[in-house]
Image (cartoon, rainbow, N blue to C red; front, side, top):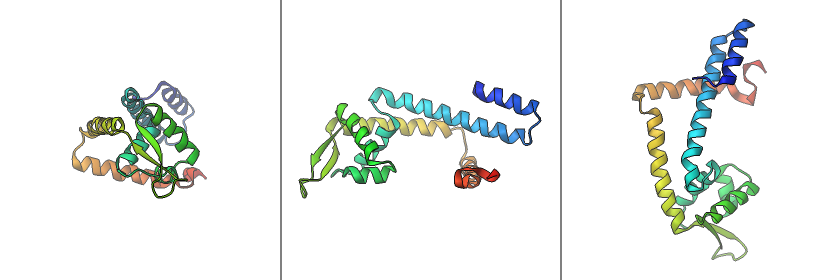
Length: 166
């Protein structure tokens, strides 16, 4: 199912007889699917006080029982330290994580999950795992392999962010 904005653009592409209208339609179907997945993901995380960014940090902290320094969290998550600070503020407000002075260097911080954070992590990871499995549950193993290969093939044309037209 295409979002309305993509339907309108596709109809205009057909009216103008643009080349590869089928490719345009595939692109719009992919974008519509990604938007729907993103929306459903946000709806699953929201009741737990989580955004996608907070979820990523929760996941990383759950895998590090001794905690992580904020700069290590930023590096592992692929985001800036400033972004980590904002996400950690939210996790602390929800009572899911806490910043503590590093035992080996009092000037440094370590971030750990609280008991509530560990409990929420376990619940959300199980729920999220089931949800992701349901997304692809209708595909056979060979179809999943084929889809992965096809998506990878399309992704190779995105190098530089400008596609083949650059």
